[in-house]
Amino acid sequence: LQIFTNHTVTLRNIAVSGFNTNVGAIQNFGTLILDSARMSNNHNSDSGGAVHNYGTVTILNSSFLSNTAVNNGGVMINEGGAVTIDNSAFISNSATSNAGAIYNFSGNVNVRGSRFSRNTAGLGGAILTVGELLVQSSAFTNNSAFDAGALYVALAAPTQVLSSTFTSNSA
Image (cartoon, rainbow, N blue to C red; front, side, top):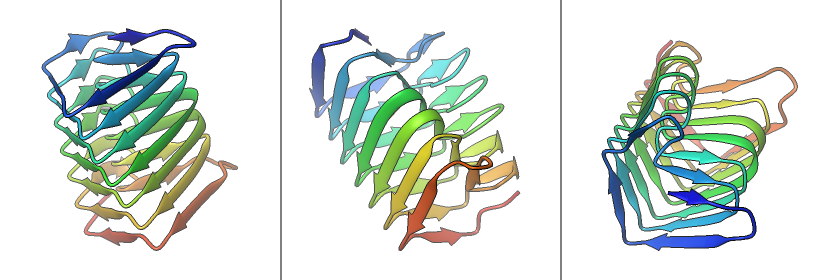
């Protein structure tokens, strides 16, 4: 699915599974809203197994299970866009290089009330950020990476982590 600039797509109560592409299951240049979605077993031969974002993404009450990318962001790569995530779960996603779940290359990502568990990557088991990141009231458990088991923050990346827990992550 490709969402073009100046278009808005809402996916509610939907399952997206089994895509094997070089752009992710969803490539977004516009506005994407995922509400109560389940994205699983999607694979990208580059970056962003489930979502490759250049626009605006809002994720509500959704789950991301066993998505993979060869390079960065097993679930998502954000390149200059704005991402808001609320009350969602990221479980058993992986990337060979960076960020088992979310790779924020540029732009901003806001996460609230979400769970990251058993995600793996070379660097930043759950999240790697180069852009702006705010994480609130979220839990990081059993994520692993060669370096930075749960969260990797690049030098000078504006980052805030508030009222969140980190348990049994390993590097």
